Amino acid sequence: MSNGGFTPVIIASAHGHADAVKYLISEAGADPAKVNENGVTSLMYAAASGMVEVMKVLLDVGGMEVDGAHSNGGTALIEAATGNSSESVEFLLERGAKVDVKDLDGVTPLMAVASQGNVKGMESVLTHLTKLMNEDQLKEHINLASLSGGTSVMFSAAGGHPACTKRLIELGADVNEIAQATPEYLDKLAKMIEEGTYQEDEPHVDGVTAVHVAAQGGHIEDVKLLVEAGADVTVLDDEDRTPLLLAVKGNYGEVASVLVEAGADPDTPYVDDDGDSHNLLMDAIIVENAEFALLLIEHGANLYHEDDHKVSTLLQASHRGMSEVVQKLLEKYSGEDSPKEGWVDSPSDEGITPLIAASSEGHADIVPLLLKAGANPGAKDRDETTSLMAASARGHVEIVELLLGAGASANDQNVDGHTALMFAYNGKNQVETLWERFNQFVPDKSKSSSTTEGGGEADADDEEEELDDGGTGAILQAALSNHTKMIDVLLANGADESIKDKEGHAARDFDYHPEADSEVLDAEREAERKRDESRNEL
Image (tube, rainbow, N blue to C red; front, side, top):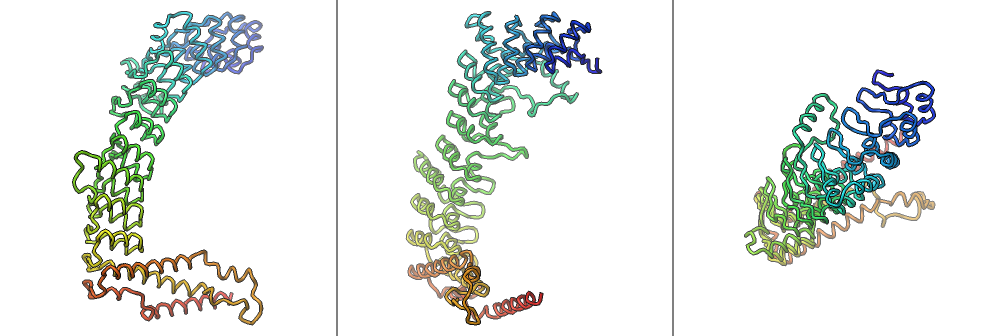
């Protein structure tokens, strides 16, 4: 026998060596009933490993007791069920193993097979239970709780075994049973934690239901079955966690959606591991999960939530270009009996409104939605920048046209005295400067020839390589055309070129002036020439 109490019979049984087990018992006089330090027998090891032939030898030749229990009260049948061996379960039941036995933790064979998702093993257990019990007794047995508070359907749902979950529900499992551990179990658990033998990933929490544990594991099919069976998705466990919160914490979006559709509170606050509280709708918008955001809005999420910087859900969605979400927010807002006054223009602590954000980011599909909902095209941020200025600065000509059409003033000035026209000229200046510098290093296709400098024919591959700019030239030309058009649009709508900023600059002072850039450009050309010479010397 080893230091742990492992006898030759136990070792041979665990590995399925039926002939060796028979020899040890019949010829060598080994006692098959010897146990290891935890009271586990050779029959239990064989059962857990699915060694049916070994079990036959142990029972028929060794005369072992089929319902013998180890130090925690577990029998060979419970070990077979926990070991997920349907063959062992069926064999032991046929040999008369007690089907309604409990170990010292209150775990039954039914709970054990359910925890493993062993459908075949579960049917064997249920068949033998029906031989002992009437319908009411069977239902009562199915809803027994272990000392940890878990029922068979909780064990099944926690493991993500929908076939077992469905079968148990059909037989009367209470989907709203609340787990409550016994004092004895909690004492035992505390001792195991102290000894370092508790290996669960999550600490034990009372007050959970089957839908809690299914949601925590991300088991969507089990969640659906439980919801269809009438599970209450709003129950709080002893740590005030709902199934929805557990699904969100685990990042199980589909599960969270099912729970919201089933009536979970869309405003359930989520506290992360750092202790920071999150709003589900705001987080869905931030990660750009439009589907979940729309679902939350549809099921009554608070439209008016703002973060610590007074950024509203509408502002965040407008900034991120989530047009469907913006539209749904505005629809819900317009349909309220007492909508919050000024919400469409509600600014962040920096004064940025949804319209300013959408205009700056170029979301031409969102700007009309906001304007139609009554957004003020003349609203200003903390620096007195308007939506028109923001759009002009970023070259969004379509939005500039929309804002001007909605009555935006072309001559408003921000704190520095800048107008939308100044921003437009400055943008054109930047693009033209980029274009000029781009042309220093990439030859103009219009100047290229089919002959080389010496008059010979150019190699086609060399020409293609020389002229391939990756599309950058076309992008710059389009941007330049866009900025030029925007200036024309602003001027046509009354933009005043004579207005000066606080430093005395008028709009055209921000335009591109080649002569002002000549020294810089010449220096860059000279630097490139020297680099070429250096490369030629290598």
